[in-house]
Image 1 (spheres, rainbow, N blue to C red):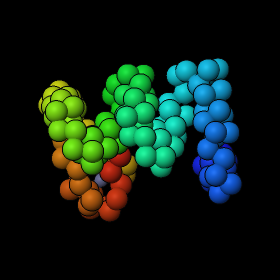
Image 2 (image 1 turned 180 degrees about the vertical axis):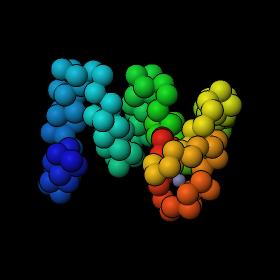
Image 3 (image 1 turned 90 degrees about the vertical axis):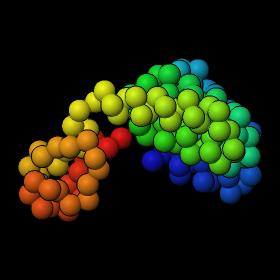
Length: 134
Ligand SMILES: [Zn+2]
């Protein structure tokens, strides 16, 4: 994506300030832009500022509470940083959500669905057709 290319170029030149400026400017005009927040979180991870990264991910999560992708990202970061207490809360939320949602994983070919992830569809036997796992 555009961001990644731009980021790569700016990182190559060690132009972190300009990059941060760009993110902040974008978020000012589009505070609900989740992809920007996720990119900014990655930016902070690369810069070693994990608290800021977690702040951005938490913000993104508030904007899109159902996003498993953001939850996994947040959880991974918390576990890497030995932040077991917030990780435990996040994990509990994920487990509760999973309990409430039926038929989370479904096959793109035959629409077979089940609560557990699958590589090979138990319905039609196709491989890697599973959808909606984020
Ligand atoms: Zn299938």
